[in-house]
Image (tube, rainbow, N blue to C red; front, side, top):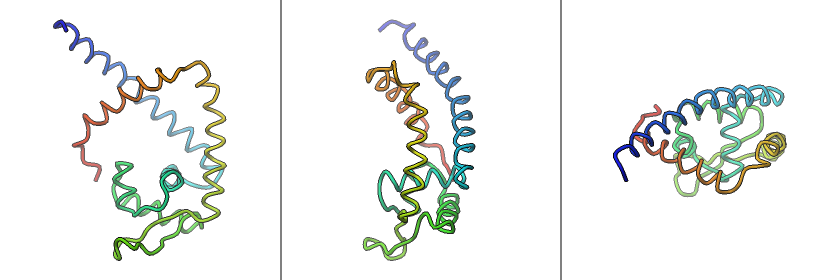
Length: 153
C-alpha cells in the first residue's frame, strides 16, 4: 500500500458522508409522507418494523438496536399501543421489563407499508448486483462502527 492510498480512502469516506446526509433526510421525509397515510410517525414505524423483523423485544433492546434513547422508544411504543398496533406482554426472562409485540392489526399495517416501500425500491435495485450491495454495506458498516462510541441518550 502506498502513502496516497489511506488519504484517498479517507477522501472516499467523505464522499460517502456527503451522500448519506441528504439521502437520510430524503428517506426520512418520504417515510414521513408514507406513514402519515397510516396515521403513524416515523418513530412508530421504526418500532413496528423492528418487531416485525425480529419478534417481541423489550424497550431497552429496541433502543439499543436502533441506537435511540430508551425514553424515545418508550414514547413510540406507547403511541403504537394506543393505536392497537403493539402490546406489552409478560417477559419470562425478566419480570420488570415487558416484551413488546405486534398485534394482529400491527402485523397487517406494517406488512402493507413495507410492501409499498419494496415496490418503490424494486426499480432502483433493478441494475445493481449483489456485489454492489455488499460493497455498500461494508462501507456503511465500517462508518457505523467508527461511531459506536457516540451516546444516543
